[in-house]
Image 1 (tube, rainbow over the protein chains, first blue to last red):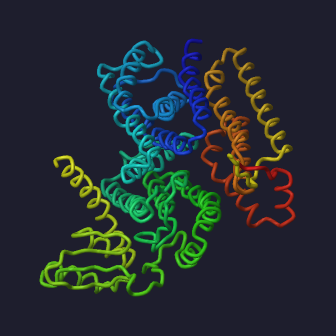
Image 2 (image 1 turned 180 degrees about the horizontal axis):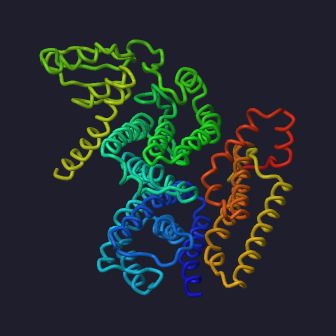
Image 3 (image 1 turned 60 degrees about the vertical axis):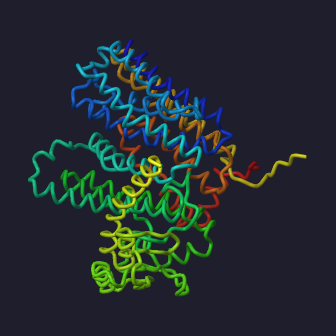
Length: 410
Length: 136
């Protein structure tokens, strides 16, 4: 009976608070979107952090009802609601540093009292701190930044961080929980198979994360239609395929299905296709087609949904509007880099050698140095685009962090 | 003087709302009866899972029914499909996880009805489930 009351309290309490707070704040759309994003981030991250905590012996849960990998689903969902949308909607403008104190105090006081439902290990307190830092604090920041419409790259980064465990850990786990299979089979796979799978997943992740990066750089929005792009994005990976994120998800399921030797996980790719045919096409028809009545149909007629083009599609624009790569004609390294690029016959890119100039790529945006060359690579072909995109995924965040540090030092 | 701009939007028809509400209440009653029967035989597990497997999907379905007007009729059909999916999840507990994972199929069915189904069927679906309403 105590277990019944406890589990309902820990799940239905946050759910009721969440519904009530959404009702109270319904007039402010950005606030609501922020709260939804906090939940979207928290959902996979709370699950992953609790699974890790269980494996590290920080705590275990008693009972078997509604458990997935040893985590009670209702407690996981209740935690994602309480320390995501509920905490944010209750005090959206309050500094986020207040939340850790409340979280750690509440969990620190209650966790040891929940035995035998929760069996704390010797280092449970550090687990509580870790879960908060990984799963809840970023969710609260994401919500606040979304509400205030600031720090777009960080918001997109957090959403991308949450999507990876959602698609490639949580959903396969649920599929195997429902239909059979387990992650433990990975320990039986030969090292070369694991290495091959890691490389394939890295390529798949590059495809997905690069599309998020292009949305931020060229669309000034996130991939989630609740916080949409301001412009139609046709650069980078989007010049080759129009659903790179869904393609990346479907390919990820295929790789995982092969690695786990599980037909049901493999079939998850079918659900990604169903999602595109059902939801994404609807979104394209009712959002993109209305906001970009000329550009979207033109783009869509040239760029396929699933099978990428070998060469990028570039809108037929006057030569003056083409992307330009300026390089130092006297520098042998830059000269060689541009020679490699030109050998690949880039589309919609003009290369200009200017003595003494810094390497710079210009279209709607401007990139310098290695990032300029990486961006120029996206004009060559699909493989070169993947290489350039992988480089941009590392270079641009590193530069962003360094420029932030410089600003703080000033 | 303040003016309120009103445009035409789409919402669930009265008949559709009544049908969904009835389905929802029936599903809750069915699961309550099943949980009670199990409890009488000493199995409390269905009651422990009741909050997550019944109240949660029912709340989601209710929220979908109460959403403000949508911009398109297809948007309303998506909401109805999701609410109906929640009802299936409640009614068939052994397959609830499978049904949850198959949610994209509900959207796909709406898309097929809207873009591929014969005109007569599309009109019937819209007349039965969708109504025009004022959007503030």
